[in-house]
Length: 80
Image (cartoon, rainbow, N blue to C red; front, side, top):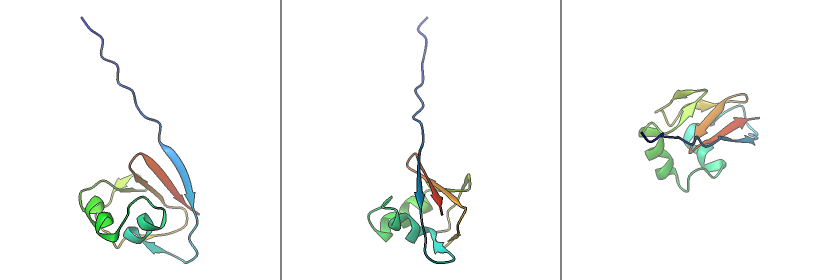
């Protein structure tokens, strides 16, 4: 019997500084170069590919504040 081994890719962590009290999720993804355009951000958010503080978020207008963690494409962005 053949043994199945799964490799789990370690998540990368990046710190992203924002200058205002908050930023909308779609704009945040563009700011940190996680997506190329606002349209791309809209799609990945609506498809449930983005987590905010560990929970899937499908609201592209969600306010992101200092201390939040956004996860997308195996990268965790910490807002500072």
